[in-house]
Amino acid sequence: MSAASINREQVDGALKTIADPETGRPLWQLDQIRNISVHGNEIEITIALTSYSAPLWQDTREHIIEHLQSSLPDKPTVKVEIVPLDRPAEPIGGIGLTAKSVIAVGSGKGGVGKSTIAVALACGLQQSGCKVGLLDADVYGPSVPHLLGTTERPVATDKKLQPIDVQGLKMMSMGLIVPPGEAVVWRGPMLHGAITQFLRDTNWGDLDYLIIDMPPGTGDISLTLSQLIPLTGAVIVCTPQDVALLDAVKAVAMFNKVNIPILGVVENMSYFLCPDNGKRYDIFGSGGARRKAEELGVPFLGEVPIQIKIRERGDAGDSFGNFADQEAAPHFQRICYSLTKNLAMQKAVNPPLPSLSVL
Image (tube, rainbow, N blue to C red):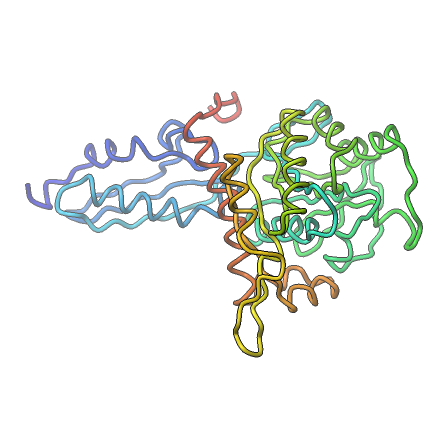
């Protein structure tokens, strides 16, 4: 068969199996294939994708090209253009929150860098093109404002708190409301009320992802969240040593008890690469989180080494700067990519029923 015999019907047929990375449903079902041009051995396609799947746009483009070249005769030249598709989030949980995925970032114990990873996830997804909110639910030790370099106090407009905008990332934290140095001494009901207010009474707007930095350990806030909103799942942060892994296993068990899926494990402080001699030092052991994730049957999202620059940027409130650092950026980018890729794969296996708004 000659290259000239490729026709529109063949291309249409080959594209039937290509899924939207947000919904897992075929692109053609949701009218996301906007244009197909066939000229001899050249194919040009325009598809529309949402900002939710922005980290996977390049993956989707490459998948379409590879699929068409392998399934059509004479390996045609394929060009794929991606244009933005506006598909607003649906309200969830009965509290007016509009977010497509709500992801809790937790740990079994403190001191493992949970907040650093939560902020990195939010920054990475936002820089990829997603609409992201970040809720600091670590009421007793709110460190997100410091990591993002802001002390701006939120104001209320039309009975709604306005989240603080940090380079396009929407953020809310108890650390912006309580005076510096003042301790929060609350029991469970007050914690429940505060988290409810942050979710219900903050003007988050339309979000692709809401990242929630959880308090360390297993406590009231996890129960509150499970009752208020349908969480997409949780990311567990731990370090490689056994004592941290024991607590991480408890965190996994806690989320399982409240029916919150585990989206993956991140190993922080994975190793130290000495800048003077290039030698690697496994200060807290090596690969423990990866092995434990395999034992528990949950995804391993990636590792972050001990880097002086990461610590310095956190202290200076420049967490976004990690994505401009050639040594730090790949570690954080891999975690963001792995998370969104795993979510897309889950949707592809079991696509949710479409809502009336996208039909």
